[in-house]
Image (cartoon, rainbow, N blue to C red):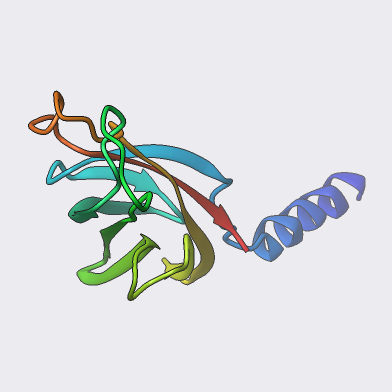
Length: 133
């Protein structure tokens, strides 16, 4: 009788387990080089645009400038472009996204390399954090 009780209990616990969001993760995206992240399932992520006007580190400028990126997230055939950063038209460093039915915050942490007159040809890399809500 105990074996039947434990089998029923284990079956109920297994059936009641909800599909959960993936834990928070930090990842880098190199401009126009797609990558896969896990957010409730596989998600294709790509850094599709970089708007850079920060003052080069080896020059003196009147203003510091701004930087913004567009990250395109694709899951199950559905793409959602997300614009993050600091420029005149957009001032948020994070945005809410829904991936595989779960809500996440996507936050821009850094865009590297910082501009200088010597590294203009290096590809940009965005460091992002994706965390469940």
